[in-house]
Image 1 (tube, helix red, strand yellow):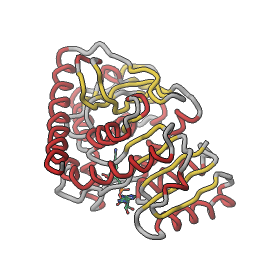
Image 2: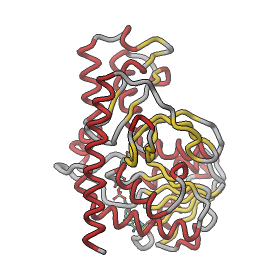
Image 3: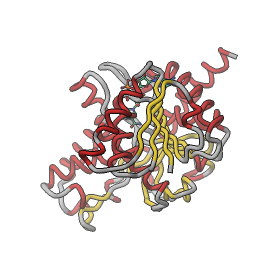
Image 4: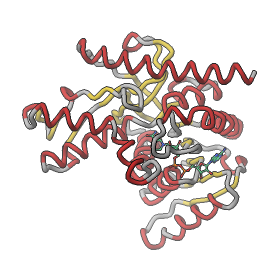
Length: 313
Ligand SMILES: NC(=O)c1ccc[n+]([C@@H]2O[C@H](COP(=O)([O-])OP(=O)(O)OC[C@H]3O[C@@H](n4cnc5c(N)ncnc54)[C@H](O)[C@@H]3O)[C@@H](O)[C@H]2O)c1
C-alpha cells in the first residue's frame, strides 16, 4: 500500500512517522511546498527505521506529485495552523486555496485514492477537497472526530483514574466549539459513564473537550500535532487494512440526520472503500438541537467559502 501525506509540518510529519513505524503502508510519500523540507523529514523517519525496526519506505518531495502517483490513500495536512487568538474559521481563505490546488494534483496522479483531509477549518476544507476531486463522498472525508473523542476519553481516564483504553465514546458535529458530545453513548469497560461520574465533573470535561484545541494553542503558540497526526494515521490504517472500524468522521450528509449537503462529523464504518456506511443514531431532542446548531455554523462557513470562490470567478 502506498500512502501520500501532503504537508510535512507538525501534523503531516507525525502522521508519516506513525504510518512508518507501525508499518501501516509499504511506502509513504511526504510532500511539502517548502524546498527540501519533506525530503529532510522523510530521511529522518527512514533513518529511525533501523532503531525502531520497520521497513516502510519513506520518501520526501518538494511539490513533485509525479512521485505520489498510484497512492491508495492521501492525507492532506497542508495549510496554516492556528495562532493564539485565532479561530479555525480564520484560516478559511488561505487554506481553501492550498487544499484546492493540492487536491487537483492528487486526483491527477492518483485518481483512485481515498482522501483524508486534516487542514482547518476541517469540515469546510473537506467540502473544498470533495468538490474539487469530484470523487464519491465515500472517498473524501475529514479527520476531527477521532481527535476530539480522544481528548474527551483522555480527560475522562484522568478523572476516573482508569486506562484510556477502556473508554469508548462518540462525538458528532463540526470540528469546533459546536461539536456535539454524547455522554449517554460513553462507556467505561462497558459501564455507562454516567454511573461512574457526577454530572458536574462530566459537564466540565465536555466543556474542556470543546475547547481542547484552543487549550493547546494557548500553551504552545500553535495547534497540536501528536494526537492529530496519530488520529489521521488510525483512519489510514482502518482503510488499508479494511478493518471496518467505527469512528466519528466528517462526511457530506445527504439526508442522514435530516441534513442535506453539509459536511459534519458522524459515526461511520471505515474500510477498504472508505466510508462503508454512515451510522444513524436515534438522537434525543437536546442532541438534535446541538447538531442543528453545529450544522448551522458549518453551513455559514461553507457559504463564506462559496462567496470567496464566486468573487474569484
Ligand atoms: N483536523 C484536525 O483535527 C486538526 C488538528 C490539528 C491541526 N489541524 C490543521 O492541520 C493543518 C496543519 O497543521 P500543522 O500544525 O502541521 O501546520 P505546519 O505549519 O506545521 O505544517 C503545514 C505544512 O504545510 C505546508 N504547505 C503549505 N502550503 C502547501 C502546499 N500548497 N503544498 C504542500 N505543502 C504546503 C507548509 O510548508 C507546512 O510545512 C492546519 O491547517 C491545522 O489547523 C487540524
